[in-house]
Image 1 (cartoon, rainbow, N blue to C red):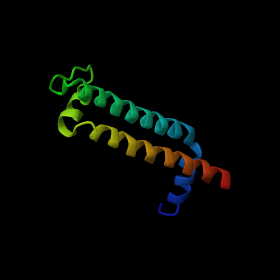
Image 2: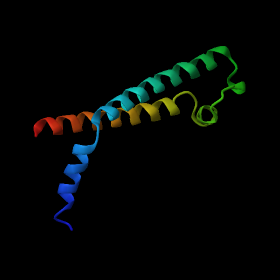
Image 3: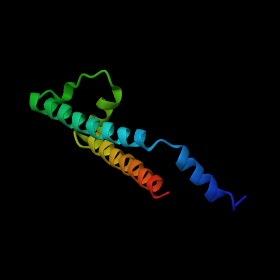
Length: 95
């Protein structure tokens, strides 16, 4: 079984679509940017104690860490997923 593992990993890389990872990474970066702008507008309006949003995770993220926590989390995740997709593209081109 241990001899088949590298071959199975190669097959998984070949089957995966790296472009969806690249696209998802870009979307996560855009979401991080939007969240930062969104939270900055809340702070500029002076109504930070009365955040109204339909997304509970936005409210919770802002209450726990201010305007920086959620954008940084999405940004780091987006960079990771984007680099993962790019790496798979280059691995496929080497073949």
